[in-house]
Image 1 (cartoon, rainbow, N blue to C red):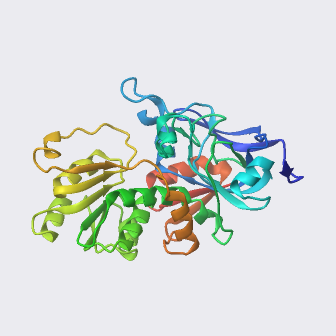
Image 2 (cartoon, rainbow, N blue to C red):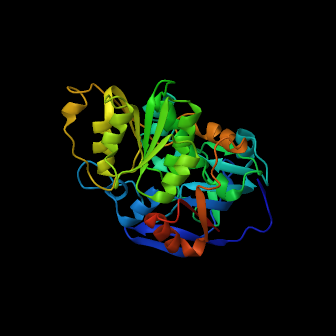
Image 3 (tube, helix red, strand yellow):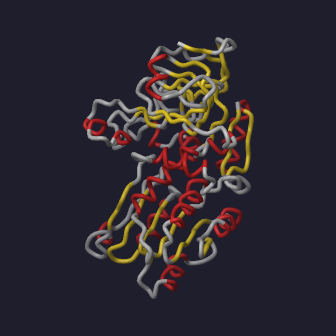
Length: 366
């Protein structure tokens, strides 16, 4: 095993201990074996999912009915991390082609490599669904000074030319790549991207690369809509000021959009999407919801015969593509990353991220 001489025994970390119970604590630095990697965390983004987990959303803590609890607390929070290799086992070194001092990222999923999905190549849908930042030990996260990449992790090397805060957006970028792949955008399509948070703004840029006929952005925050326009949207609509369904119908001769991509996690986004999408359209759902959404399902089958497509995390090639696009500066994130906070100010970072008026992407820097 190779390691630097200056690795401490303990570190500071943001621990997920329960709903509305996150703590900045001193914890042991993870120990690694010959199959593992220890990184010094450079940056870790605050995801909307992190905030929803902190607030107690059923997806993370279970609803006693459909959803089993996802969080296994206490664990280190955070899944949008990037770091530098400071210790590495001999087996991990050979497997991943990494050396001390390299910058590396692990995918957010920790596959079991034993279930039917992992064995068929669909490891991002792993039945055990361990995600960094949500399960203790096996999948601790990156809101800490150090982090372990385990033997089951999928690890990628990342250029040091990318600023650390920008490199921390690789995870949401990878999810965006997978979503846009699922959308199957064609040249003649009218595409609506609803929800101009960090991931929506990334998807907007990726959708633009597909050169659709029209690209429409929907949100309610002026700063985000202005940036969406700058990043390539043909039209931007504030759903609190205009009837977005009516506006899309005007632009499509009354038929509706061909592709609707929903990111906001708000029930109204689902309902508006089903209204504005044309017959035989493609509805792509990515969001993490805090509340249930009720709709008349006859619109999906009997009325419109829609293709309803889910998009879960990064898919098969999301990370390599996201890394390549960031290294080539094809996708711009400099105006998406708006705020950085030191790790000990995690609570202020979460609050600013949730409020979302002035911020877009908030990043913690240990």
